[in-house]
Image 1 (cartoon, rainbow, N blue to C red):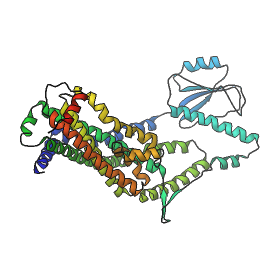
Image 2: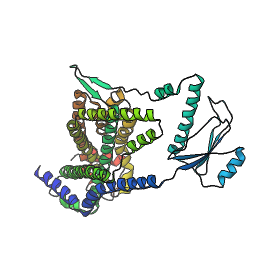
Image 3: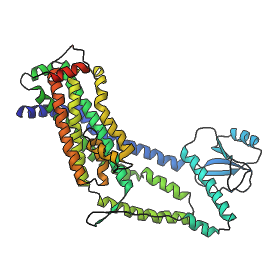
Length: 443
């Protein structure tokens, strides 16, 4: 055990003392806030200096009346359409909106002519303007007063979700928060397990090809070497990850506060309110205040301590499970090119867990497929952290953790049998038959 600890120290210190580690650990947290700051500043300047986009409107029905706004300057155009298109082509303006003569309650053939492919957001804004007026026409047909129309359009339904526990206790719930949390944690697990697993494989290949390993195994058992390397690199990854989380959170918050920037969701909400009537805008603002308070209440109900513990456990468990397999692959080959044929079977279960996160876990966290994905050790690191925010039953969590430990022990034993032979083999063309032979070979 003392020799394994020495290997862990060696792997940890070698990587932590490298300039590349220091540069990556410091630069990565700086890059994200910098990108946020630069993009936010550019968006802010563009909005400050942006002029309304000119939209020519050829309305053959004569019923539509579009008002100009800070985003669009609506200019009436005279028929016929061919002449209007020719006049528009001579300009550098945004678009030509053509509304043909048709059933005003169900208009067809409406066309937006542009010179370039425009963003979905801008085209959507024009579509909403048309849709709102069509709704007004229908309301007028059925003699619905304008005030009643505004009251109808400003109607919003706020549905709260409450979880009832077995003891009858009520806890507030917010699926959107759980979805975002599960998505973020699941993707992080997938990325870091894959990245640091490949680092283990690269480290084993480098030592094998440089013949350093022949000196090391003269005093350390191959299994101890493999285990020490896996745990050593895992500790480096965990340290780097914690530093990134702290720095990225602190710097991003400071950057947003300094420039007075807003998150994209808030910007989108402001755009919606700008295009709405006064009554609708007031209703949205009131609803937004209530939603903000509800959001804070829901955040207070989330057991972040438990989630952090589960995340660290599955990060380490998943890393150790796959790290052993990557170490076995690294011991069997002599270059990254040779390892490609073995990487796919190793990463396939991890990829299944990643795809299952989007297809099953986040859509139905308590469904049967989500359950099995979070129980099977090869997929549980990604699937279970995706489910954990949805308050997984304790017995399922304990079962999943126990099976992950068993899975790590199994893959370590499996990889160790290949590693002890492959780490000293050079010049051998390796395939699955050879790996099976090494695995069956008695020590």
